[in-house]
Length: 449
Image (cartoon, rainbow, N blue to C red; front, side, top):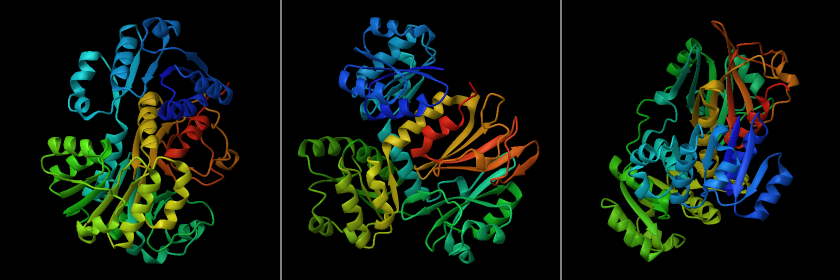
């Protein structure tokens, strides 16, 4: 597959890194020669140091033979123009990153008028995940996900307390033919292996046949999971804060949005009629306490600084707030999350890259996919004759720790795999992966030479 990426920022580089290990020819266009040289040293791809808005630049990559073009420069208007030009010049599918609220309020018109196939908005994507968590509590619809004969359910350890302290092999003795695909622990999704133990307070994602999982779901289901959230405080009035405040206020929650830039506050006050906008420094805990921090049902940190978001989240947790969510963009900080007790940590870069990769992969490879707490993804893939994983026991694939083969559907039979299980032609594979491991999934699904 031929893919062109215009814009070598964080998102463009992340998508290129994920795709380059698969069966794709990648070209990256950017005006920053230094970044392009670094990319070409790290990965086997083509780089072009030029302006992607120029028709001559697009024609130089033989745009008529390009399957997908992703426009993800820092400028919305440039992305819209680049994607539109590429489509007019014959590119099969075009994707544009568009972030501004003014554009998002009319994105259907933009897509139709400019002939853009898919629009990605990182801030809206992260907002949707936070909203699902706060407004519904369940990341799975009604607590259970089904596809064919396979199913997955989620439940807190307290609903099955005998699982606490057990390793994965010990869990299999208690729940035969059911696999623990993931654990949510202190805001972090973990893919458990071997001697990893379930802890009190963990949220468990269990996989098995539909009948078994439905039985388990009946045992562990909690009534009234849909929240009755009333008061939310959001720190940071950027695009994520804006979208989230609007969505939660429409839901019926009372929202306080804290922003330290006075001009931004004026904008927010004008565009968010039902939201209380406070001109203040969100790091001033005394001020937040004066604004009834202790009475909040939820607290969300969405500033542009990871350090602030994490420290404020920790402070909010110490004030006894039930649901504390942090926006964190740097993976280096993710290791701190588990120790802090934050309920949910989201990386907009991971979520956006996942969104784009799902679209590019399409139905030819990925039959369906589903995000879990904005940190992990379930995907269903049909094993074809070109994949190098065919005919090999799973233990020989040396699966990365971020990836788990959760189930295999072979005809009418559901198989919960182990290390001895061999993948066969036309098997329907259910793969659980952390979003940080998406490039490794691409490599795993790579076809034979």
